[in-house]
Image (cartoon, rainbow, N blue to C red; front, top):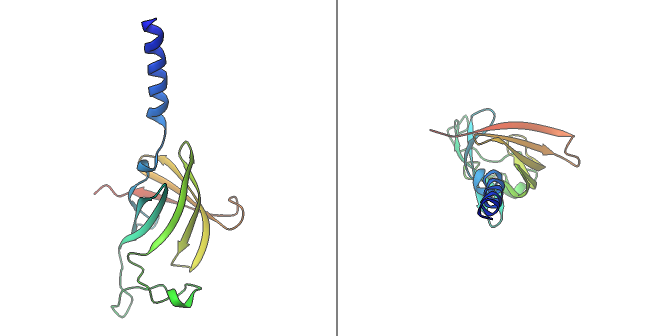
Length: 145
C-alpha cells in the first residue's frame, strides 16, 4: 500500500514539475536584433511586456525615440522606452501562451500573438493578422547579465 501511495505521489509531482506557469516567461528578454530588452510581467492572470532598455534610445537629433508610425495620431509622441508593446497573453497549455496582442513600434503595426517557451532561455514569438500560419516569427533570448 505504501508503495502504491508513493508511486501515485511521485507521478503527480512529476506532472507539476513539467507544467509551465506565467512565472516561466516573466523576466527580461532581448529581442531578436538584441537592440531592445522587453520585460515580461504578470498582468493579472495574463502576460504583458514593455520596452525597458534600448541600445539606441535617442533619435538622430538626440531626442528620446517616440512612436511616429503609430496609426493613432495621439500616440505618435509617446516615448518608445517604457512602452507596453504586448499584452493579454494567456497560458493555454504546456509551453504556449496565446490570444495576445503585439505592437511593433518599428513598423507601427498591431498583431495577434503567440508565445512558445522553447527552453528556459529561449522564447519564440509569433505575430500574425488573422491566421497564425500567416505572419512572422521572432526568437528572443533571456537577458542573463
